[in-house]
Image (cartoon, rainbow, N blue to C red):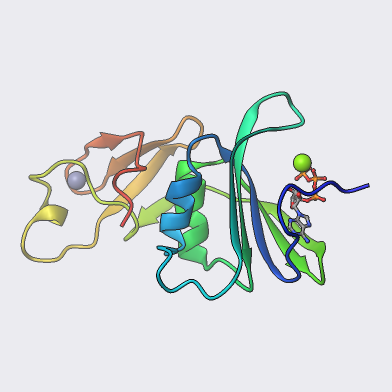
Length: 152
Ligand SMILES: Nc1ncnc2c1ncn2[C@@H]1O[C@H](COP(=O)(O)OP(=O)(O)OP(=O)(O)O)[C@@H](O)[C@H]1O
Ligand SMILES: [Mg+2]
Ligand SMILES: [Zn+2]
């Protein structure tokens, strides 16, 4: 029997296995600020996972994530699973994947980098390692590992 701590959703997305503490950042990625929410959104923070660890979960009714949003979730929570819910059931499930190239979704943390100057140059990073995450700016070579405060 399925046990639910929150109202089940009919159609939408469950982002499960989010690294504990990252649920609010996931909500920010998908642009939910509370003012213009038109559908049911549930957030569970610090719930036990089957592996005996802790995780966060976000459930959004009537919404799927676009590729940029999926890449951003992968960058802050590489083990997150995306469950597409249709008619109350999990119709599709996949694990997010860190892309090979990170373009236009993370700011370089080097304030002097050309991507942070007046003329707009789109930031771009090569992914040197996925786990643990390590990005190298293609313009200034600065390495970044924790990008959660630098998402665009
Ligand atoms: N209709 C629904 N409304 C809200 N949440 C749902 C619904 N259906 C499934 N979920 C949630 O989606 C997630 C994935 O569901 P699933 O039944 O695949 O669980 P699971 O077998 O534990 O998956 P996993 O192995 O990925 O942890 C769970 O967190 C579950 O609670
Ligand atoms: Mg599970
Ligand atoms: Zn840079």
